[in-house]
Length: 322
Image (cartoon, rainbow, N blue to C red):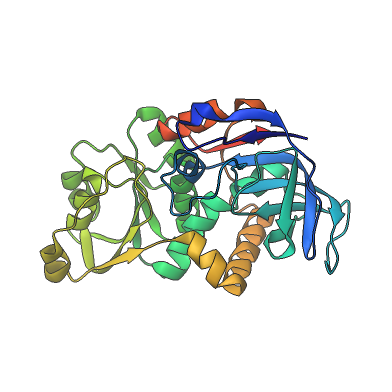
């Protein structure tokens, strides 16, 4: 099979398109003939050696793959060759054939295509966990989404609207702000003048939940815009800058700083994770949510696709075609 391989930690341009041995399923595992592979910001961090985990090199990156099951290992139940599925794994998805544990494989609804299935895994899974478990977002609240045009940002907007909240999105360009509005945001604001704009948009009340996958200077603006009993979600640092919090703001405003580590949630709360996926799949089947696919590129172009995401050029989900 063909795969994109990280030979050693370094720039994503170091990725190599190679022939690799076909995977063989062990106990409790399946092999998927991939039709779509999702590209995520953490994939780029992993390749550069900047992610929380550091697998031994060489390795195949990639966390999401959707397609048909080719073969199953001993002890696998409820899955069979030919089933349409999506898998969420730690790495190994940038390949034509993907090995996955049964516990990380989900059968697709009939009307869900492979691109959407990949999109609903990491990006939408992160945002869903952030807003459901970590923020416990309520229908009557106001949600602020920084980095609104990224894959997780657009997901957060759509999930916020599915829950029934008012959503204020923030993005850097007119094109990206239009994408936020198309995803359902009630308001889309630029970063310039954001502090004053948020005060005006909330009537001075502030935002109940702030979703921040960006970090950098916008984090402090969000902290100063928090309402009493608000929850400021730390999701990631796409700006490349890990911000610091003046903790007196949390004291005076009585808001909570809440970390979001989706990978930890998936590993430690598999039943809750599966329930989250069921809700996302049901929302998709009913037409309540629809991921935005930015571009579809051949697997061999994974390095360029990853670099575009790291440079914050993508608007929505990037898909590789194995």
